Image (cartoon, rainbow, N blue to C red):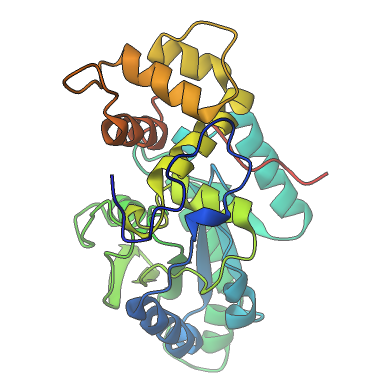
Length: 304
């Protein structure tokens, strides 16, 4: 299997100790445009809704946004909560609130947390909207802007909020590119923006988690190394999920290469001559994890 990035991991055997060969960097031109779009429209919105993936609440925080947003009121929304550990999601929400950051968890697929999100946005916008009417301005809807990394669930959330297909959904990082205002509820308008990543991943572990959750396009790094590292992580995080889904026997190996081989055999990912279809099993592992079929897993632990 070949990717656009040169395969430095060929011949890799045993436990994966180094992820530097993944070369995870991705900052295409349309993301620079997205950053400019956010900066240009910040002055006309009352609240910024920052979406974070509930599986990686820390790793999906864009370090550029703090500088971009400044003192603008902000609501943190943990999306895809249906795929994350419920207890850890609750603890992450408590952590944000303890730091005076408004936060809610949302499962857009089933509509959970939507009403709380709308209520929190309106509450945060009250200072601005009341100030306008106080000085004789005509009452207007609160204006919010949605920001977040690619594939964090913006379009799915907005469609659920609006109750119709205003935003095009496509499960591919970076698909939402144009500026669009959407009527969400009585007294609330929403500005969708494209997802933006930061230009350089200083934290290699965070970069890996972004790749596993599909915030980074699969064609830009070595999938085989990534899949092996994911399996080694899941052995520690949720061994029962691996055993149950792939019918693996305990104790599980802690070596990604061996796990990949065993899963491939169990699922019949075999080519002619009994050779493992490496690409097929890698795609299978990533797909099963991303869809939640391996269980509700949170990869980011709360800081001590």
